[in-house]
Length: 187
Image 1 (cartoon, rainbow, N blue to C red):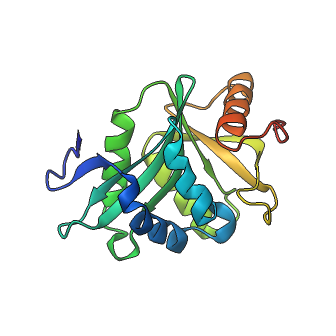
Image 2: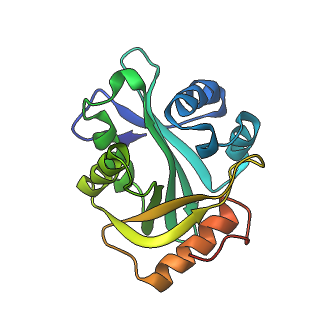
Image 3: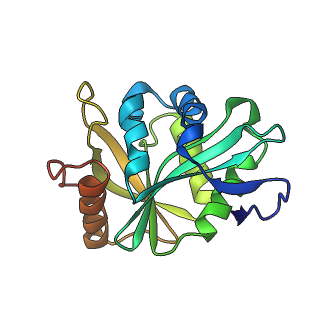
C-alpha cells in the first residue's frame, strides 16, 4: 500500500482480479466504447507483468478512483484514470494522481484528446496542474478493439515536454507493449 498523502483516510492499493468487475463498470461509465478494451480483453491484461491497476476505496470499501499503469522499459504509461461519478469534483482525483506519481520512476506519460472542446481543455488543464506537459506532435492511438479506428490523440509527459526523438521512442514502446502493434509508429 502507498500512503495517500494529505487524505489519510484513503490508501492506494493494487487492484486484484476479484475487483475487476467493479473497476470495469467505472471504466465503461467514464470512457466511450472506443477508448477502452472489450471486457474480456481488459481482464486479460491482469496476466501481463507490466500492467497494474491502482485504486483507492471510499469509506464504504468501494472503488472511488483508479488508474492503470504500464511499467515499460524505464517509463510508466498511465492508461485509464477515472474517479467514480458521484465523487468527482472533490479533489480526490488530483490527490490520488499525485500519490501514484510519487511511487513511479523514470519517464511518465499519458494520452489525451486534442483541446478541441471545453471538456478536453479542462482535462488537459487538470493534468497541467499536476506537472504534465502537452506535447503537440500528432499521435495516433491504435484501435482498442477490431471494430474501432485509430484515434488522434496527444501525449502528455510528466515534469517537462519530451524532445521529438524521446517521444518517438516512447511511442514505439507504447505501441509495441500496450497495443501489440508496430503498425502505427509514425507520429
